[in-house]
Length: 351
Picture 1 (cartoon, rainbow, N blue to C red):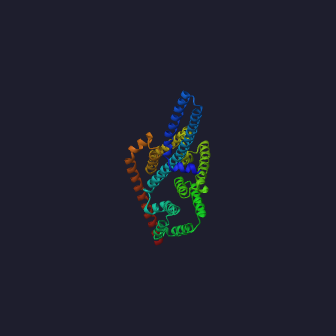
Picture 2 (cartoon, rainbow, N blue to C red; picture 1 turned 135 degrees about the horizontal axis):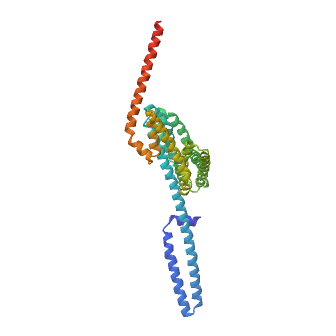
Picture 3 (tube, rainbow, N blue to C red; picture 1 turned 30 degrees about the vertical axis):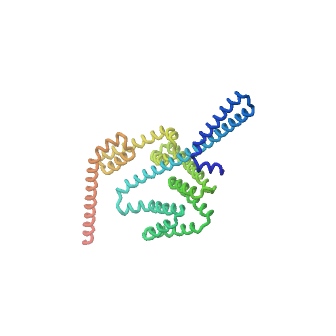
């Protein structure tokens, strides 16, 4: 272990093996030629031993290089998983932003409050586990000045103080538990980032190093669960549920696994698009412009490259104008109904 750690710190040695092996090979060849020419058996044995040493050094260099390549590929795979998870989170965030654009300020505040609290708490915990205590407590202090975050700040302060005063073993256990919790909440980007920071902080800890394997087990378990749910939804022809599961499942699938599900997924998408198309056509036929606009926007959002989406997109201005007129008519009708009710109430009171 000490030898490999030493060699790992000096990665240029991987390139110098070539010069050493080439030098030993030249010595072996030249020694063999000279030994044959002079008949010197002692020189021949030395040449053979040098050749044997060159072989074993070359074999060791091959193993070392192969080990480094395997490790690099593994790290690259983990980074790709993290990137895929971050892309998925960004897509979800964009969807939330699109939905929030239709909400009032009060409703938007309520919709984003939980997500905002979660992100703030994770940012504080990340700094805490990196042992940046001054920054951690400064962040908590800033949060405590906001009335809506005061309770959360008190909880985080208690957690930070307990972690700061803990032993190294307790800190590792606390960090491992936090990473596992993130994995159980399916927050993979944060979980793998926290695991990476943990390993950097405690590279000699077996518990810290093993947390990546535990995360993979949790992720594989979730993947199997989603695949079973997907299979059941497809068998029962539950299109809505199939699409919801597929959105979650996409981040867990390898390219080959994605191809294997492509036919089933295509059928589900076609069925969903067909159902939305029928709903849109019925709404237009019955002059239900608000429903038609809502369904049309959903088709554009969920199936942006479909021909139906292109056709609806070209008529969005007309749909919005008619939906606006329908909404105005409904508002006037409700107002008139309210006035009529008030008049009747007044007549009853006079009688």
